[in-house]
Image (tube, rainbow, N blue to C red; front, side, top):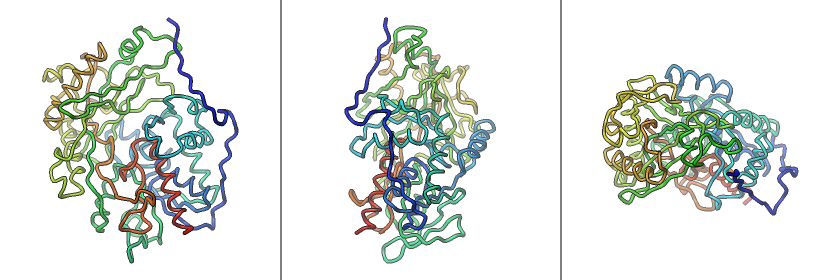
Length: 465
């Protein structure tokens, strides 16, 4: 059987043509503070420079290279640095979370501009033509560093180890911000791009009387299969042809009128510990650029609705409380040191505690448990039925060679920070621009970058009025 190829044909600029953004020197330009150096924050900064304004980026975490040492300690010793982990630090959660660049949010902005900027800073040109572009966790750090150096060269500022600890308002607008609990900076324009795991920021806003809203999210597990098995299911051949990439899958079913679906599927990938605080276990997945590891993993999650969240209408922090409670339960079930509770897939469906567990890419280790004791009862029920439906669609998917581990709980922000549709500004606080995943307006590298560009343009539009 001959290998198949998918071609993407562009009628615009040729893939190899030069790309020359309109960079400006902004050393003495009007400043805009950006809290967070994830995709939203970095692309907001790049857009501000092109528009002639000076970005001042702050981040609680470390630059990408020293951040790696904290990730190694987290993986090998189960020690969580609350300010430097898979979610916090230069590049945000995007730096070490696979580098998938596919988005369905085409209405958010020009995706080609974001892709061309990434190529401009070192990404492979293939992302301009691939149907599902992917950079790889191993290549992203260099790209992030190149973006940072360019921001500095244009006159912007980047401050690491600078945690936003308070926001002060006066006469209905941003007046100043507090850094690390002891420094006060003047600030009239703040793009808040702190990510979906910055729970302290959500608490800060509530304490200051700045409105936020609880938002439903998704909750479940991460499942890992041998990559050869997924290849054989998808390609109907084993081993796969040398010209074929590691096979992926995308699954979605309705169970009791709720969506059960795959999330962030990582062919040839690795499962990593994504907790941001001691006493919780969170799992996520990533792939290197070659996708050549022996396992395939994916989040399998269930939609959470308002009725699933105690006190949803009464407290804007109610969804965070549910999220945290499940993560703490996973930590207790695992026994500490980021060991994750786990169960073979068929054993989970049959309610059996697995007597042994298969090899797994999750390096902190696994503890065999009955996962229905970790997850909310209705979530476990829907997951079991969802897996059964997946097994009917993909013959061979339901196997005890696969293992599930938990919990997959950071698929999206558990809050939304309100903002104007066009102005991107908080309706109660002039100069405050909620942005990206943490504000509830993006989900992934591409959509977060697009939202950063959108917020930066909104800031510039307000400035010239």
